[in-house]
Amino acid sequence: MAHDDACLDLSGMPFSTGSALSALHLLDPLLADISSYEINIDGADVGDIGFEALGRHLPPRLLSLEANFAGTHVSDEGFSEFARHLPQTLVHLEAGLNSTQVGDQGISAFAAYLPSSLKTLAVILYNTKVGDKGALALAEQAPASLQMLEVSVDKTKVSAEGLAATDRKSVV
Image (cartoon, rainbow, N blue to C red; front, side, top):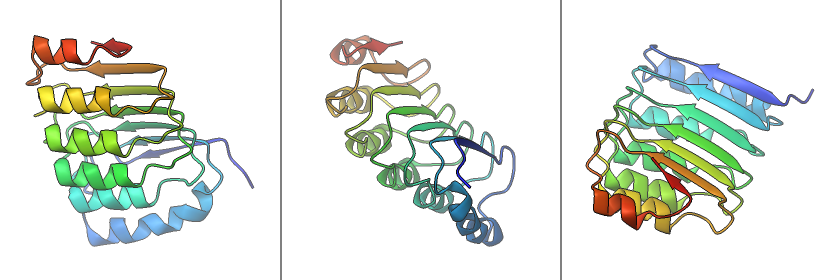
């Protein structure tokens, strides 16, 4: 039975335990035909291993992904591993990384893994470690198909010069 969309809400839960990670594979058959997926793990105890597992179990034919990772314990390494598994079918992606440990290295890796089919990208970097290098990498490595880029950089290390360098579509 095919479904159009699904939502995984683990906000505030201890996700890094072995039992939670091992259970993710149980969702694979249910998510196989999902085209729109929302992941909300706001404030959940998700470490880098959990992010790699979340990425590994993304629906394979996904067109739209909205991921709220605010307040999690993800670092550059975990976010890079998640991004490595982004389906190449994505056309719309929203990633909320507010109040995480993600910095320039994680955003640069994320940018490198963006699917070539992507048309819209919104990234919230509020209160992260991202600076000019990460913002510039995001703008420079964005796929040619990208029609809209929106990046929120409040309370980050991105300077006015960094914002000017990202002169691609919309940076706020």
